[in-house]
Image 1 (cartoon, helix red, strand yellow):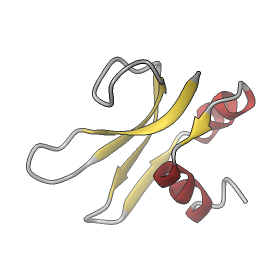
Image 2 (cartoon, one colour):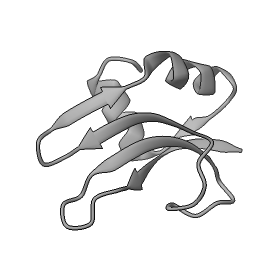
Image 3 (cartoon, one colour):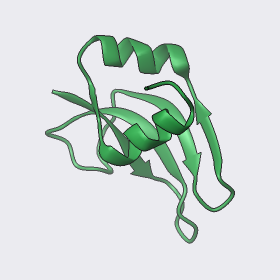
Length: 77
């Protein structure tokens, strides 16, 4: 099963990538594809909308936090 999940990138400041990843891999493990970027400190978000729709159509489940980010960007309703 594939999930859309946050993957931490920043060492001192928390910066996250939104990735499509198999649930059997750990959070920092190998991802299938990077589909976005989220910076909670600067409140910046970049989303690759076609890639997100592709994985959602294939049955990927977003985690709670990613679902909130997608709702805020009005991708999910």
